[in-house]
Image (cartoon, rainbow, N blue to C red; front, side, top):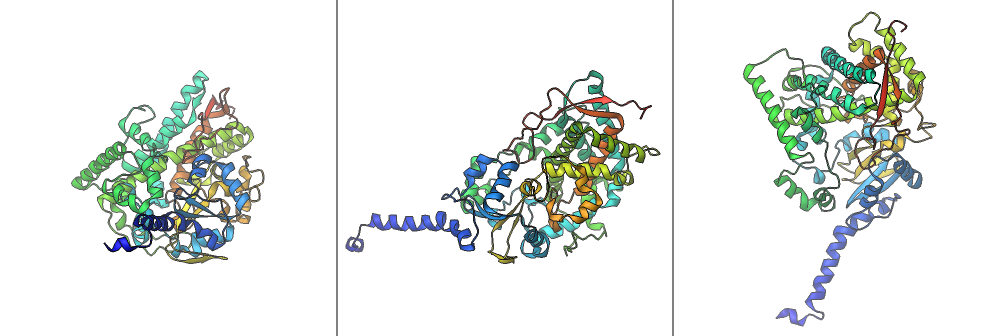
Length: 517
């Protein structure tokens, strides 16, 4: 055989070839940032800096700010083989979010985008023209006019929240704040998004409630996800073939069934005039509302959404709107309990605005500027997302740095929100940071709980209205205080993707003397 005349054994040839292939696959990407002149922690083959990320945790303000202090406002990090560029420089953020948006439209590279259901059809994960079309179609559903129509439903849910709080005022017991605010936001989402009354505040075992909470049991340490991060080209087709989605399968199946039934019933009956987001999504392409996003026109076309689009985005609005708003509301109440003077100031504002009103409507909520300042400061301290992701769809120059195609860009929101240069005494609750005058002086990219630019959070205005209505109703009736079992300061679960206290937020309430008030 010809192979017998090789000067070295075939085994050694194969081993050498294997070594070259291993280098190309596992080692070559790790030189990306050295070639770009960007600093960062030293990565390991295949896993990159993943071990550091898992050890530090996802929601960890101290670790996030420490990395910026150690490596600078631009540094490289590796999630497996995926090069990730962390950017917190203000001028670069301006370009990432708006000026160079054409090159940084998507949240994830195509190789790391899973076409599974429901995640693959969610607005959060759609790419390019598909994202623009669906965003343009859905945006009118979150207009001021639509939110005005949601006012009565939100107020009704807030009244039930106050009744639940009243039980603890009578006994003087402490309570898990997130349980109450979570039930409130779940009722609001079910009512305003799907026209369904589940009353989770009085029936916590409702299947809608149980499956809704289960949707958040996303294990980021799941072996399949870790393998996907390390071997995306191999794992992507496998996961798509088996429809391996981030959300638990029984939870997604439940909601697919519920939403599918609602859509079928409405299409069969030809219902008109309903005021909920399910119907607005089904009819959104008929709207003529024109909106721009941070001065950038999307140029998307409004199309009728497919059933998969409506179901997937209904599910997205549910999981995103429930957890983030409930958590923020609980943190605001915690801040009020620790800062009685600020609580009194917010209460005085609410009482003055509500003197001649029965309903905390859209206009009333809009007038509550100090309460909004308290919410904004809480969102600075406890942003729902610790990082915001974008990806380069083409090579692009951002300030002094040329970023190649298919680089994942992460904006470390936690590091920005706890940067002492941007926010003196960042751990202190100071609502006055958000007066009109202070906001005009501050760079808009120093506060990013809802993201920025055309791809910011589409439900931002709904979330703020929901927060203010629920908080106003509580403040008008009760004083929020700490309890013997209140953690001060809060100990956060660093492994969670949302800000989650280890022992919950336990508070007490006292009924306010209405006559003296």
